[in-house]
Length: 48
Image (cartoon, rainbow, N blue to C red):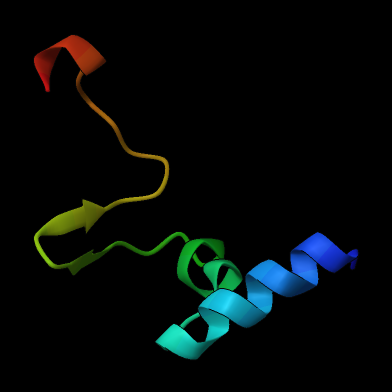
């Protein structure tokens, strides 16, 4: 890992889950009304 990756991992690993844990499984979850469903988008940006 390079220094930037280490800095990012150290910054966000304190918040419960790393980005690798959150997005690596392909599961979906909600957080503060923000729906995260990796790999699933059934609308265009214009519809947002």
